[in-house]
Length: 199
Image (tube, rainbow, N blue to C red; front, side, top):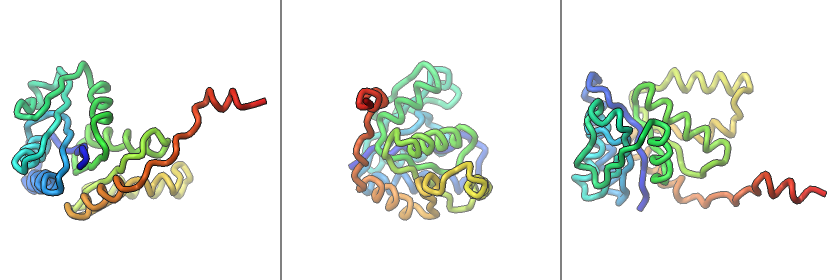
């Protein structure tokens, strides 16, 4: 059992297929015995994935900034609803409460969340799996941009490999579970320890 953080859309204007995808993800998360962490909204994909997890008998943690409680319509049915002071605190709490990250198609907020946890993974700040589920190539331009950055040596190939791309719900959850099964690397010495070890 793990707590899986799902980053996804809160827009109510998107095609219904994205809502269906979020529901399918929530259903699969619950079927595999995992719990959910979300941005705490009850609308669009955020609400759909949370309702599906609860319908499957698992718990959901919603984390939402006070300023968005009304705008994103806070998920008051969440097993645990945490209201934070701002967006930065929200992301910190979501990160701390999660053991894996799964990103669905979404907007700039979803992109920000994905890039932040991916960067932290590449820097060794956590060892949690970072997976993207993109069945309709919504993120194709992003993947192309990443490849361009690797070619120009702005991004290391090893960093690219830490972001796992999938196209089906089952493949996405398999990738999450595979990442959870990898033992974390030994902790690196803190900078202070390295300095003290120098002659």
